[in-house]
Image 1 (tube, helix red, strand yellow):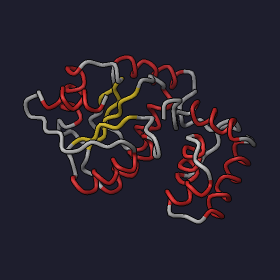
Image 2: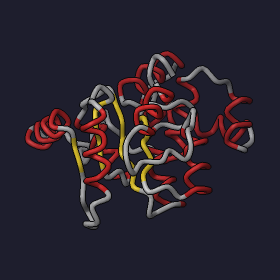
Image 3: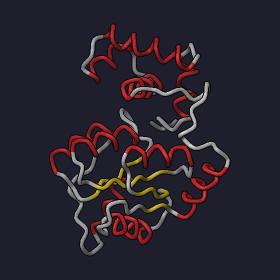
Image 4: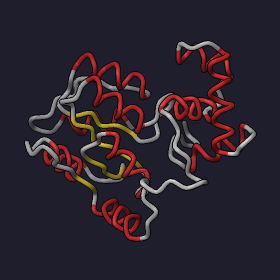
Length: 208
């Protein structure tokens, strides 16, 4: 998919693709080094999901505009991406014409210029009207810290404690502590339950 997208973009006037990334951590490193005008970020990337990736890119390369690509027109996920700093959200099934329009819109110069695919905008409106937006936090939707979300995603991707500790540059005891806190907050006490929760919240996917 990345190769196809790159090939399409490189055919467009005024577009230069400066890097590709296979996961969120690679995307953050590339953004910090290259400071691109735009980062196209897949919402469900392995190792670090789109929300955390966007948050870190905006921290380390604040002038880079993030446009999210997703197969999901989910109001909650769109809201989370926008809160993390994304300036656009388009469906991965869109054509290159719409993607270019989204990129040009967020680069148009206005401070808060945002682009949402029409289908995405509809879901966001519904989420706001029925009160199911990401701002609502109830007992079934606890607030997780960025580190807890990272650990949850890596657990859902099948990594064990030692692998997670190595990837996050933390001790196994620290990883176990985060996992205990996760289970207590979510009232989930098995890897399969944590995995289902992570997929439902868009932190990972079955293909990750």
